[in-house]
Length: 395
Image 1 (cartoon, rainbow, N blue to C red):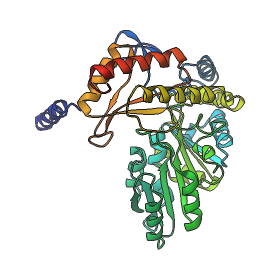
Image 2: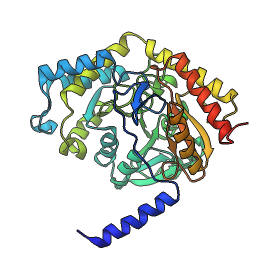
Image 3: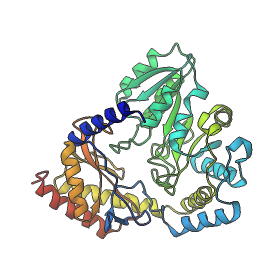
Image 4: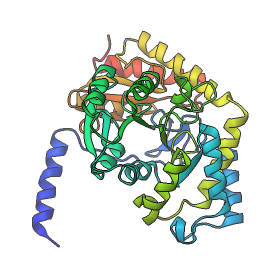
C-alpha cells in the first residue's frame, strides 16, 4: 500500500470536512417511494428523481419479475456479441415511438449515453457549443472528442448565436444542452435554439434525463413542451429517473446516428448489456405512460401547489414550473444543517453545495413526485417553515 497516497488523501478529506463540504450517505431500509425508512425512522422523501412515483409501482415490479422469468437475470455479454434479446429491440422501438424519432440505442446509464455520443460523430473538423451549466456527463463526453469546444452562458441565446457565427468555418456544429438543468430546474429554450440551429445549419443534441415522461402535455419531454418535436437531431435520456428509476440510458435520433453509435460508441461496445428486468419494466412503463397522462398531470398539480406555498412562506426559490424546486440558502454549512434538521422533522432532503453547484450558491433541492399526496406536501411545507424560522432563513 502506498502510504504517500493515503496520507495525501487523508489531508484532502480533512480539508473537505473542515469546509463543511463532506458528503454523507444516509441508509434507506425500504423500497424507494415518497414514504421511506431512512436512518432507521419513517420519513417523507423529497429528494428522489422518482418524478412519477414508478420506482416501486406494482406494475413496474410485476413487469420486472416477468422479464426475469422469461429472459433471465443477465446476459454476461456486450450487445454485439451475444447480449441483444428481442426485448432490447422492443424497448428501443418503444422509446423511438414515444419520442418521435427513427431509432434508439440503449446504454447501461445515461452517463454512458452522453460519454459515448460525441467522439463517434465529430472530430477536429467540427465544433461543439455547450451550455455552461450542462451535466457532468455531457462535459466529460465532450472532453473525449477532438472537436473544437465552445461554451455559452446559461440559456443565453445571444451568446449562443455569437458562438455559431464564430464557428462557421467548421464542417459541423453541434449545440449541446440539457433540456432541464438539474440543479436549478430551469428549462432550455428549445424553440429559440431550433430557430438558431436552422439559421446556421447546426445540429442539436439535448439531454432529457429530467424531463422524459412528464414534461409536455403527454410527457414526451421538453421538445414537446416547446413545440419542437421532430426538430431535434439527437436526444439522450435515462430510464433511471421518471421512467422507473433503475439503471439504463439511451440515445435516440436518426437511423444513421444510431447506426454509427452502434459501430463506434465505446460504452456501448465495451459495457455489459442492460439487464432483462430493467428492460421488461421499462417497456411496461412506456406502455402505461402512452395510455394515460394521469401521473404527469398529478405531478404538475403537486409542483404548482408546492411552489406557491413555499414561496408564500418566505423562501427564496428558483422560479419555474419544474418539479425540481431549489430552496436557496447560499451557505454550504447552513444547507447541511438545515437538511439535518429537516430529517429530524421527518422530511428527507439534501443540501447541495460546491462543487456540485457554484460557490456561494448552496441550496436544498426539493423534488416533487406524483407519489406525494397533498398532506405530504403540507407536512413538508410546515417542516420547512418551522426549521427555516429556527435557523433564521425566514422570519
